[in-house]
Image (cartoon, rainbow, N blue to C red; front, side):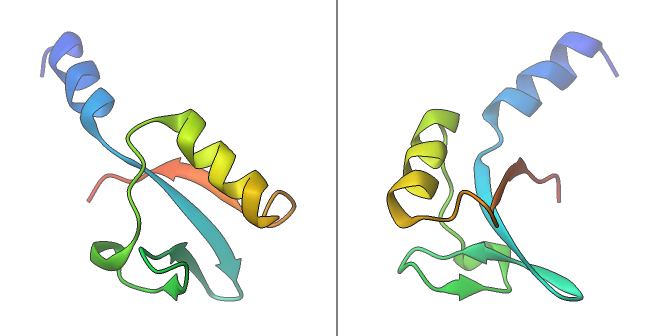
Amino acid sequence: MNKNIEQEIWNTLPWYILIPGGKYAYAIGKTGQYESELSKAQPFYNWIDAVEYVEKHGYEKIATIRKIII
């Protein structure tokens, strides 16, 4: 696959806020609850928006912000 095409696909993927929970990681849902299904998670299309959400809700020490390829 062309590297430029891969980069374009990567750029369109949303960011998710993940909280480790023992054996699994949970995503922050659209209602602010922890969700085990990525389809119910809150997508962030701008990394800064995800960082601001983490800082606003006090998740700095436990959260990670990632793009996930399904």
